[in-house]
Length: 180
Image (cartoon, rainbow, N blue to C red):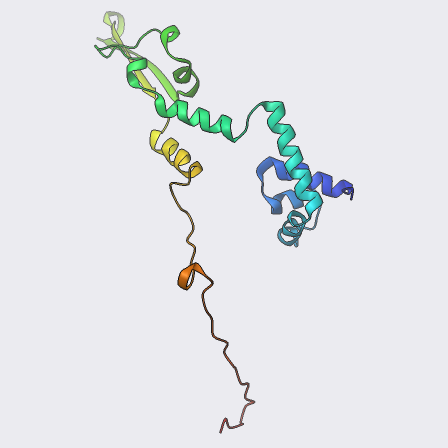
């Protein structure tokens, strides 16, 4: 079945942040019921198919997918300080840095250092500060991708089956009545 214009808009908006409630609002659905409507829309096979197709097209267009992201995370994980620093702790020329360092460097500050005051001030060096990517965060992302960390717990009954429950009978008693 073909999607309505509003549903097509929901699909496009959903791709922005994968937030069904916000996508429903941006698509023009009621703010008061956006959470419910967003959930209901994601239950419709035609809409989920349209979302999957749009994601596939975006991946083809941008040439990025989950494999691309994991490869980049692995590149960051392999970054080694020896790639950019000489044994005497001076920085190698930027043209000699591996591509990963040039792409993923988080910050680079240069500050000239001087001695003296006024006209007698003389440059004595340059302070270079480098901030590289957060390796712990990077490993956390890789670990999540590979299922190393669990963010949820699953409970099961004996033998891995469902947890047995016991039905409970509730007797309603009107005020002033006895339960005898």
